[in-house]
Image (cartoon, rainbow, N blue to C red):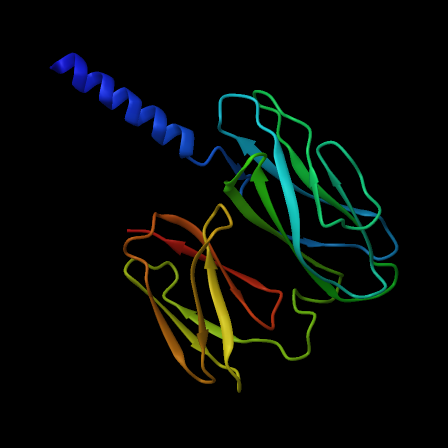
Length: 225
């Protein structure tokens, strides 16, 4: 009986590992970086391979919001492209090699900021994915490219049980909370001058990232017990 139970437990463990997240962005799913004028700026997001085996990643471009005269080209672990294509496939990686997405950004003399969103997933398994974001800005600017900047007050930070969001704008705004893997764990439209409450007691401890419509800025929120 004990041998049967051990066998069943082993099978369940294998099944769990097979469906676990096998890669994550290094440090954060959001890269915030200042890019210099009249230069080709390299902006990297690397990924850790936790699979213990060969890993091959694909990516999809979900949103590109940048000044029209910025020149932005994409490289991944395998190829470099002119501009940002709709999707692509990286070379396989082994052991401790870190695949990556790299943007080469040439803002020329144009001030401003960019918010660029990719979904990265395991080849042949789109359920195993992370969303990553490049938040880029030129000297003298912030992460906000739009004049109609969304303003949210968030408290407490750090949070343990409840997190409160207040929309200080004169119109409804959509807000969403991302975990360290870039997955959306909460999202809601908040009315003008309204408030939302997020129960974070069931969330894992660690850093989370709040994104609000109308702003390219990302707020880091720590959840701890």
